[in-house]
Length: 332
Image (tube, rainbow, N blue to C red):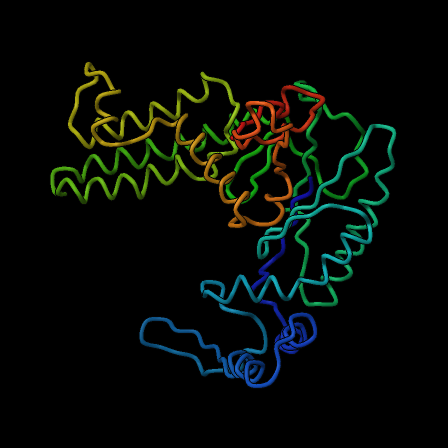
C-alpha cells in the first residue's frame, strides 16, 4: 500500500480548473455554477500582526480547508485521478487529500504497473497545480506470514518502505498486530486523564462525564473495528484506560471490582464496543446505509428453506488462505 501525501493540497486548487470540474465532471450548471464561481472568485488575502495589516490582494487559488465544502470540492477536483488508477489496474481509496493505492503481488510479479502509475500521478498533479511530497509519502508491504520481512525487493522505489504507517489516524504495521495503534491510544488517553483529574474538583458530575467521553471514549472508539482479532493482552491495555476513566468519574478505589462500576455507568467494555461497531457497520451495509465498497463485501447466506438456518439471516463467510489475516467473521 502506498499512502500519497500532497503538499498544501487545499491551498493550491486552481479556481478555473475547479469550475471546469464542477461543470464537466459533476454536471453543475446555470445559477448553481454561477454561485460557485462567485464563491471562488471574490476571495482576498491579507496578513495581520497585532494592530497592523497588509493590503488585501486577490486569492486566485485554494478552498477553505476548515469549511464544510472544502473536502467535498477537493474530492471533485481530483476525480480524474480515478481514471489513472483504473488504467493501471490498481485499487485505491480517496478521502479528500488522503490517498491510498494498493495492489497484491507475488515475489515473482513485476512492479512496473506501480512505477508507471506513480509516474502518471506525478504528471497529472503537476498539470493541476498539486504536488506529491515524496518525503512524506509512505509505502508498506503486508506479508502473508507473521515475520516482519519483506517478501520482495522494493529498493528501487523512489519512496522508502516502512514497517509502520499512519493511515487516517490509524497506525498500521506490516503484520497487522496493531500494537503501534494501541500504544498511541493508551499514551494519549492517560495523558488526558491526568489533566482531567486536575479539573475534577471544579467540574460537576455531568460535565466531568462529558469531558471524559470527549477526550477518552472518543479515542477508544475511533476506528476500533480495526482492532478486532488482536491479542487479549493488547486489548486489556485499552480496557485499563476505560477502567481508569470510570474510577476517576465515580471516585472508586482500585480495590473495587470494575464490572459493577461499568454496569452502573452503562459503559460497554472495550471488547464489546468493538463488536458493537462491527455489528452496526454490518447492519448499515445490509440496509443501504453504508458506502458501496462496504456493502459489496457482504453476501447473505441462502440455504435451502428446509434447514433451520434458512430463517437466521446468516452471512456467507468468505474463504481465506491465512487465519491470521481475518478468517474469523461474524454471522448475523
